[in-house]
Length: 131
Image (cartoon, rainbow, N blue to C red; front, side, top):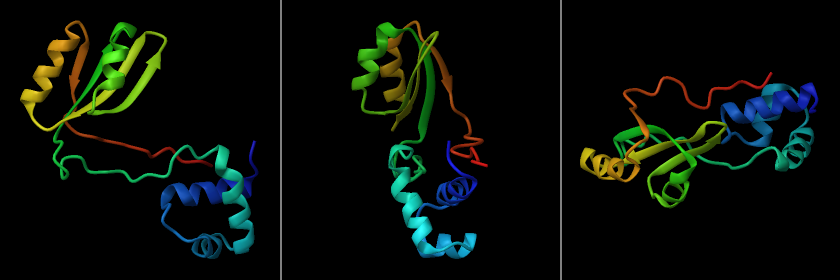
């Protein structure tokens, strides 16, 4: 478990990871050295520093979520457009991005018996709050 102070630092970083340690320290009213120590200690908790991309603006406006069995895992692991891939107790769930609807339909032919859901609108993403 992590302390309340560490949770506050982590929550502040999650809200805006581009903030400097000094800015986080100022916001939380704690010494910068404490923030830096906390960040060093988070190495095992932080899997990846990344940006949340608007994929439509970078040329991938078509998004689907599929649920299928484990037999299709090799295909999904190699598929370039797979953004998220989860192994569940029921099989595999993947979020896949495409440049065109034709690309989507070509892919769907490879995973014929999968349940396929077109993503109409993203309502919430990476919003879990650490408190």
